[in-house]
Every structure is written in C-alpha cells, then in structure tokens.
Amino acid sequence: MKSIAIVIPSHDGQRRLDWVLTALQSQLALCDEIIVADDHSRTPLRRHTYSKRLRLVPVTTTLRPGNRSAARNTGWRASQAEVIVFLDGDMVPGPGFLDNIRRAYSEAPRALVKAARFNLTLKKQRLGKRVCLRAVQAADRWDREPLSLLGYEAPVRSNALAAQPMNRRAEPVVSNEWQCAASNAISVSHDLVSEVGGWDEGYSGWGEEDMDFAYRLHLAGAQFLFPDPSRCYAVHLDHPEEPGKRETLARNASRFVNKFPEVLPAREPAYARYGVQIRTVSQSESSR
Image (cartoon, rainbow, N blue to C red; front, side):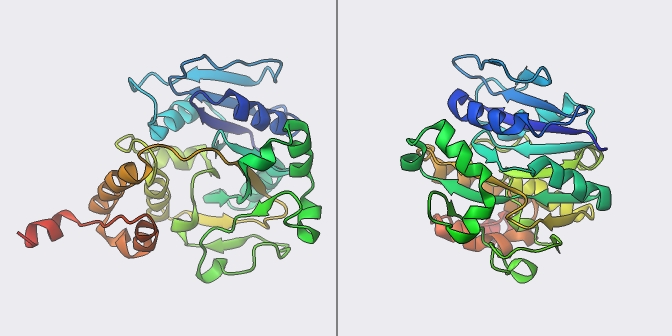
C-alpha cells in the first residue's frame, strides 16, 4: 500500500480547515499523514481532536502570506510519503477520495491525478457543517439530483476530457491536457515532485503557479489522469473573492508566459475571461 501525505496550505482558514479534516479522518490509512502548512495565520491554527497523524508546519521561507508555492513546498518537503496530495484548504474531499488516488498510483506512478471539483455556495454553507458534510458523502444522489444541494462546476476541458462530467466511467481519462490540472485537488508522486523541483516560489497571490507546476510535469513526461467524477472528487467551499485577484493573475501570467512562451495559446482564453492581456518579452521589445 502506497503511503499518502495530504498537504493543505492554510491562512486564517480554521473553519474551512475543520470541514476538510473531518472529511479526511475516516479515509486515512495507517501509513498516511496530513500536513497543514500554516501560511502566517494571524490566529494560529488548532489541531482540535483530529488524528495524531496531523502535523502543523509553519511556512518560514516567506515573510508574509499569499505564496501558495512556498506553502506547498513546505508541506511536501516535510514528508517522506510516496504520494503527495495537494489539497486546498477550501476543498472537502468526497468518500473514497484517497482510495481512488492510491489505486491510480498502483497503475500509473508517473501521473498527476486530478480530482473533479464540485461547488458549494456560501448560502448553502449556512445549512451548517453537519448537513453539508452529509451531502458531500452522497455522490450517488448527485447523479439523480445534481442541483438538490450541490451544483457541479465543470472545469474547462477539451479533446480527451470532453465527456460529460457526470457520466460514470470505469476507467479514468488519460490525457496530456496539463492546462486542466488546476491545483485545488491534485496528487503527484513524491519522486516526481522532487524531480521537477517542486513549486516555483516566484509566483505570489492568485493564479498560474499551478499551471507552471503542471506544465513542468508535462515536460517531464507525466501523464494526466482524470478519474470518474462520481468516484474521485472534492467540494469547493465558496468564499468572497480575494482582493486584487486580477492584478496578481496578470503578474503571474506574465511570469509564466515569459518562462514558457509556447503556453500562451493554451492559456489565452483563461486570461481573456479576466480581461488580462499578456505580452512576452520578445513582443514587448519588438513593439518599441
């Protein structure tokens, strides 16, 4: 059985973190652990009564919060587990989440596994933790009543990923669509994370650090696996949009595209949705 470390970056996210940890408790094998990278929280995060295999590790490589890459690097480097799950602190895993990830790595050790994402609005969260976590467990009900409580947020997918998201599939979709591997709920082997040098800490704020990570994995020959959404998923707990989101995306997108100019055609539609226009260094120089 492959050991798994779930790495969760968190900044002042105790309430959402409680929901995530509650959903994970029954899924942990004896060889697994949870590492919460505390990204300069103003109020220190608390363990409560969660598993002894939960570790709180402070991010010490930055002076202020908001560098998701630094938080994730802090987490995975603190673990010797064979598989690293990078799970955002607002993503509640569904039943069988870890079992399905473990199964995937028994067959495809050089893969990034991307769980499907559902969405729970702030209004629906007011029903309370107990009601919402019970709904998260009811994956089979979502097929019949997908809008009864939780709405499915389909990621932008193309080519091999164009299948309707709620159709049950026996086998995961295998693709080279690195741009579909947003980092909110992904897993990669410890060896492969190490091979590509982890996360680029030159990104700060929201956006593109995950695309940089996914693209470097693609260049290293990784496969991208997208399991059946009814079997491997996590639910995003909606929250108010981060201030300055568009500005940090523009800055981070510029960094990404200037590192890897060939990615611009794949990322341009996403930038356009936020009204962000990117020029490469060579384009800027040629327009002078």
